[in-house]
Image (cartoon, rainbow, N blue to C red; front, top):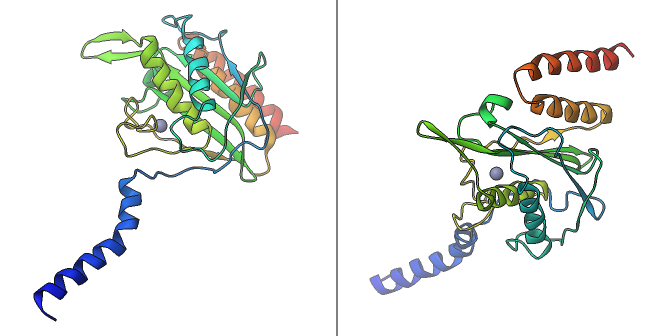
Length: 231
Ligand SMILES: [Zn+2]
């Protein structure tokens, strides 16, 4: 084999191998589930009852924009077209709430601005909690997130609630910019549906904004657990 043939062979190999790496280069990223919701519309509840001190009444509008983003094609990575419906009951498919500071309130790692925790049973989402903080420390001063920031955060977390994982493309909304160290941890619930409701209540309890909140939350959880375990 002369040099030229060797080069051509090498080029061929590269061409054959490339589709795989091109896919990676094309920023493929994992999906939790291809089609997580078994019904449509997907109902969304925005918690405006348990709000932290620096909550902005403009935040729900950012949720609406985020829903429209995904309904209108989003980042092109969904294999289905989601339809959302805002509802007034907290047992909606997706529950959205805000906390003052993620690390302090939920014990999340530093740098986490939001998270989505989908609960999965029998290969489908049965519920998803989205928790967002309203601001973060920049150096020594605390700064509230503006609407543009919030819209990006909500859009990203909604992407998780629609089954998407993280992108490695910095231009993609599913790139973990605002929550570099975010850890999406789907809760697998196979048989215990009541536990889901309890988990939601606990999430609400946690959000119950600290201080007095913790005591109340612990008591409430204790009650719930007693109820469940003694039956
Ligand atoms: Zn994320």
